[in-house]
Image 1 (cartoon, rainbow, N blue to C red):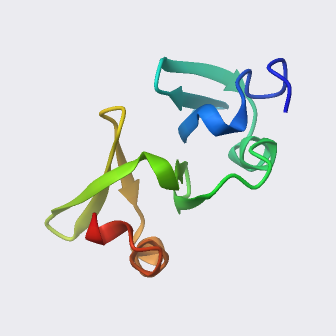
Image 2 (image 1 turned 180 degrees about the vertical axis):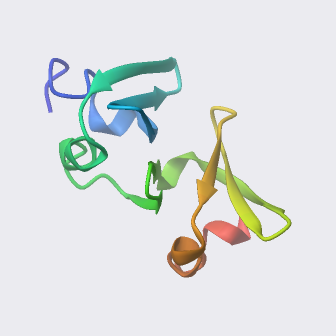
Length: 103
């Protein structure tokens, strides 16, 4: 995808996406920025990059996951850029199947 696409960066650079009101925050190793889009539009712009939607408002790239931490009944993924991403209870099985909890 060209640099001037919906996300403003190449899909390979994206570590995670998070929703903020009507915007998507695009996180990369170099920082983050907001783009006006729905999460579904932003995920589609990633052109099939390996990752999972871990929560209704989060998508995480496989390469970004460095570990996981449980906080009571809640699970969060630790990412290479220092961000922690929530995992919805309905997504725990998919995250476990992907092997992300073993990192």
